Image 1 (tube, rainbow, N blue to C red):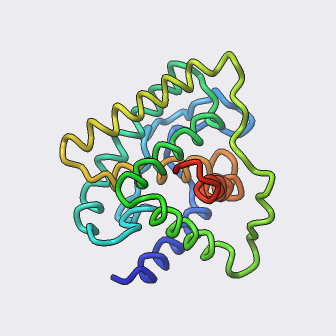
Image 2: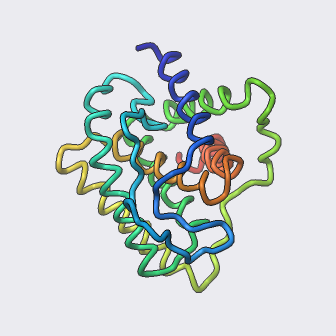
Length: 214
């Protein structure tokens, strides 16, 4: 499949994502500690669907797609359990997941390759004029309150430990990064709406452009 083909599937998946409910254990926007009455799973279930960032860079499609459900389950359980224990806001959790994912992509494909693909994705999201980059100029990751700093530090370390363990078990780096992005974006869409989820992507792109990742 060509890069354009991957990008088109990526765009279709994201736009479809914004119109469905997600069975991820994520808080209602106005009730940060409320849990759903029926816990389907702390991870996202995409029954037969392609993940948002799965096979973003091509070349490992079958491997990544085969591995993605298991990795999403592991990552989702990890994040949900951490949320349960610490009550850390998802507004602080999502940016950490995104940052770990971007650094994993950079490990696998380099800074320039990662930036180009985020550029391509954002272009697909903004081509029709409905969403514009300038709408997100002031969108950025929230400041971490001093009392939450220990939790965010621990979460970052836990996600890296899990990511490295999954890679050591034979999962592709790309699969782990994709799982982190998929879960954070779909959960963000439910908790804050599609505008919020797109803002996370825009923030990652801005950071790639500004040299945060090298």
